[in-house]
Length: 141
Image 1 (cartoon, one colour):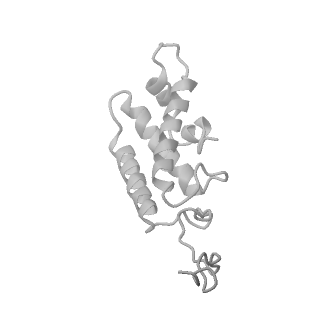
Image 2 (image 1 turned 180 degrees about the vertical axis):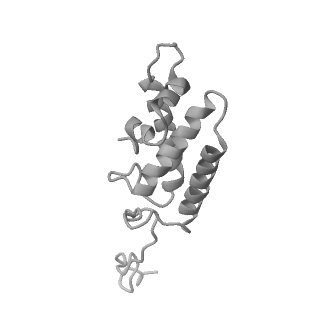
């Protein structure tokens, strides 16, 4: 499951711009495959950072993850052409910096923050395995 959709991207940029960024065949329409590829790349980047703290991919997508997926995907779509405008570069850099903080455990994904993965959380055990050697088993030595 992708963290954002083409519709989410169209909430941020005009469809005409999205056509310009994706239409390599000059068909005058958005190339859904290109959009899906950039969303997948954004999600992979997010998973790379968040995977140190959380079980990824997220089954329920936190709002911040969706926002970052949109920002990163749009930045990467612009990168196919002339490069992203300054505001898009800033959004991308901010997203990556925040994700670095998530990986270090300094940042939270907000109120809908999923539980941290069990594998990455140290836990204490109060049970001990059975003894291999006892006085009785060592009596002959």
